[in-house]
Image (cartoon, rainbow, N blue to C red; front, side, top):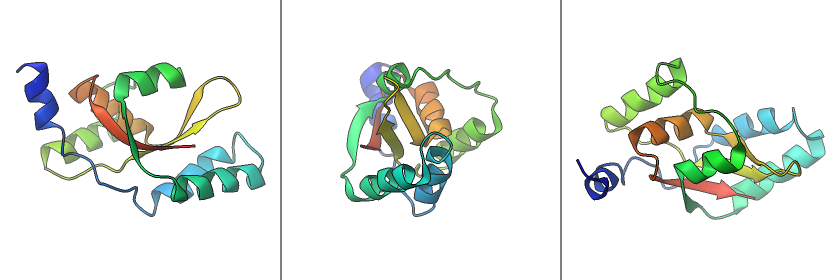
Length: 127
């Protein structure tokens, strides 16, 4: 299968908007990095900003995070969702003060998308 065919095959695996439970998950993570008030402000901005598209490989490069193994339980669950035609939620991202992108929610979904196709366009919210 060539790149265009793969892109077409995986173009519709995403929900249009993040799910409600993604925002509290992002807050839990961000409170480990920022003071609670700052974390809450980021999450409020994430709720209000529009969803954009970025390539999975570029998100990884900007975050400096490692690609989790394909057999990671959560990555595996997301790959199974895609196989069963269940849509994934967009990823929530914060530009960090530490010169790296912070994946506030969706790290396992990002790993899943990378395994499907590293150039896959990933819907995300970025603040």
